[in-house]
Amino acid sequence: MAIQKLLSLVFSHLVLFLVFLDLTNSQRLQVGLQVGLGISTSQGLQLGFYRQTCPNAESTIHGMVQQFIFKDRTLAAPLLRMHFHDCFVRGCDGSVLLNSTNTNQAEKDAVPNQTLRGFNVIDTIKSALEKECPGVVSCADILALVARDSVAMVGGPSWVVPTGRKDGRVSIASEALAQLPSPFANINQLKQNFAAKGLSVKDLVVLSGGHTIGIGHCFVISNRLYNFSGRGDTDPSLDPAYAAQLKKKCKPGDTTTVVEMDPGSSKLFDDDYYTVVARRRGLFQSDAALLNDIQTRIYVILQSSTNGITFAQDFAASMVKLGNVGVLTGSQGEIRKQCAMVN
Ligand code: HEM
Ligand SMILES: *[C@@H]1O[C@H](CO)[C@@H](O)[C@H](O)[C@H]1NC(C)=O
Ligand SMILES: *[C@@H]1O[C@H](CO)[C@@H](O)[C@H](O)[C@H]1NC(C)=O
Ligand SMILES: CC(=O)N[C@H]1CO[C@H](CO)[C@@H](O)[C@@H]1O
Image (tube, rainbow, N blue to C red):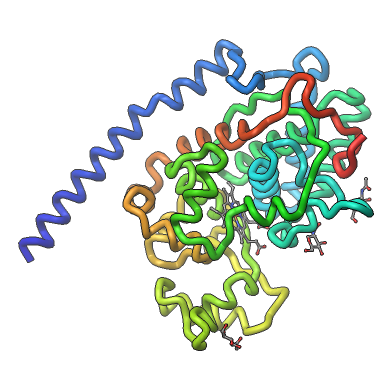
C-alpha cells in the first residue's frame, strides 16, 4: 500500500514537471517567429513561397479541400496519411502520387499504400492550379497544404506550411515497403523508422496521434485477433473486452470491413487517441507499442489524463518537422504538370 502511494505521488509530480517542460517548450515560439518574420527554414522552404508567382494558390487549395471535406468528412484522414507516406519515402517530394510505368512499380502499388485514398482530391486541385498558374505549384506542396487544411477542418490544430518543395522523378514500391513503419512493428522498430527520417521519439508518439481520425481494415488486425503467435491466440496486449468487440466486427479472412481507430469520434481530430491507447485499445500493435517505452508511455498517460493538454500544439510542431523531411528545393526536381506522371 505504502509503495503504491509513494509511486503515485512520484508519478503525479513527474506529470506536473512534464507539463511544465512542455509549456516552456520553445518550438511554438519559433514557429510563431517564422510566421511573423517570413524566415526561410534551413531546407530552403519559405513561408508564402507562391506569394508572387501564384498568389491565390493557398486559398484555392483551402477552398477546394473545404468542398471535398464538406461532402465527405472521412477524406480528412487519408489526406493526412498521404502526406505522411509521401514524406517517409524519398522525402516530401510527391513521389507517393506517381503511377507505376511499364518498367517501374511505384510507391502507390506497394502493400502499405493499398489502402490510400483521396488521389482524386489531389488531382482535382492540381488541375485547378494548373489553370490558375501553369507549372508553378508542386504536387509535394499541395500534399503538405492539403494535409494541414484537412486536419484543421475536422477540429484539429493548424500549423504553418513553408512551401517551395519540388517534385521528385523517382518512386519505387520496394522503398515504401522498407521505409514506412509497419503496423506490426515493435517500439524499437518504430523509433528506428522515425530516427531514419530525422524525427524524434517525441515526434513518434505525437504523430501517432494522427490515428485519432480514420479507419483501419480488419485484415490488418486479423492476426492480432485470431492467430497472434501462431497458436490461434489473441494479442495479450489488447484489452480482452475490446478484442471481443473487434472479433464481432472482424471475422477471419475478411478483406473489406473497416473499423474506427478512435471508436465514436473517428471523424473528429481530438485527443482521444491517447485515452484509447492507455486503455490498451490501440488498434494496431504499433499503437499498443507506445506503452512499451518510458518516454512514449509517459506522453500517452499525460495526454490521456489531462484532456490532451499539449497535444494540439505538439502535433502542429511535429507536422512542421515532418513536412521538412528530405525536401527537394531550388534547382532540384521539377514542378510536375500532372501529379501522377513525371514531365
Ligand atoms: C507510427 C507508425 C504508423 C503506422 C505503423 C501506421 C499504420 C497505419 C495503418 C496500418 C493504417 C490503416 C490503413 C487501413 O487499413 O486502411 C493507418 C491509418 C491511418 N494513419 Fe497511420 N500509421 C503510422 C503513423 C501515422 C502518422 C505519423 C500519421 C499522420 C500524422 C498517420 C495517419 C493515419 C491516418 C489519418 C489513418 C486513417 C486513414 C483512413 O481513414 O483511410 N499514421 N496507419
Ligand atoms: C496460425 O499461424 C500458424 C503459424 O504461422 C499457421 O501455421 C496456421 O495456419 C495459422 N492458422 C490460421 C487459422 O490462419
Ligand atoms: C494514374 O493511374 C490511375 C489509376 O490507374 C489513372 O486513373 C490515371 O489516369 C493515371 N494518371 C496518369 C497521369 O497516367
Ligand atoms: C491506391 C492504389 O494505388 N492502390 C494500389 C496499392 O498497391 C496494390 C498492390 O499492392 C494495388 O493493387 C492498388 O491498386
